[in-house]
Length: 266
Ligand SMILES: Cc1cc2nc3c(=O)[nH]c(=O)nc-3n(C[C@H](O)[C@H](O)[C@H](O)COP(=O)(O)O)c2cc1C
Image (cartoon, rainbow, N blue to C red; front, side, top):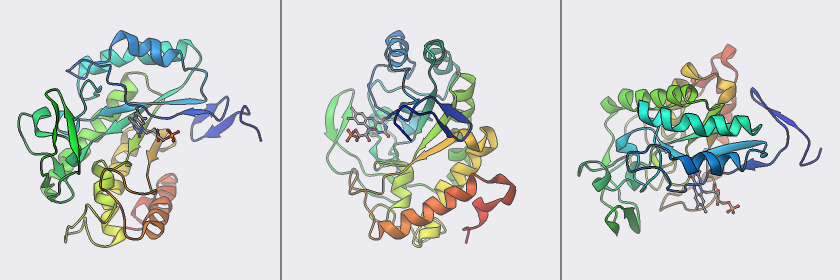
């Protein structure tokens, strides 16, 4: 088995094992609409086995990076289409990385509204905003009643990704963003069904993956995790236990016949 041997990964047949990591570039418009240079940039990299796009906002409330792209409206879909077409024309494959930044979104990106997170915590350090770097603001705890709307944002963005010509989606559940804030113990202090035990902390991730696999075939849905170290103040007291359970749960989600996404529900 060599680096330039092809590999089957889910529904994808990649001609080699070199995958391009998702890299935020900040080259979209302030409205999250991709620009022409993004088509050129990604097409230049189309010989990769698979390109994972830069993290792409699922909603206005979830995106707090200057000039990062989104996938929550038609104009953004239309802006992505030439990008995926250029990659395909050059013989490549590209997944969209779906992003909700949680507490890392500064309120200035969202009409002054506080960001949401697993708990009322504040990301360390400074936020990059259109007005320069400023201290992060404290997030408010996401209410259970708000979860259906969050799941709907994820599925709408995934549906939009497919409409824009992406070959699949990668759920961003890593690096201290929203889903990682629920997963890892340092940012999740909840006492309801979404906090405390490992099963509870991975509940939101499971629900998002279940929702995504209802609109995109499971073999075209990837998940990025970061079991390693501290990410933007997010870490876990027992990462081996947590991420082993997460991997088991996700493995189940890939076999729809057995409905095992529910296996670890508790
Ligand atoms: C400029 C830059 C932008 C990044 N953007 C993203 C991103 O949008 N999504 C993501 O999951 N990781 C992102 N990362 C993390 C990279 O995908 C990668 O995991 C990280 O650079 C570590 O790999 P390395 O040691 O090869 O650099 C970014 C990293 C850099 C340096």
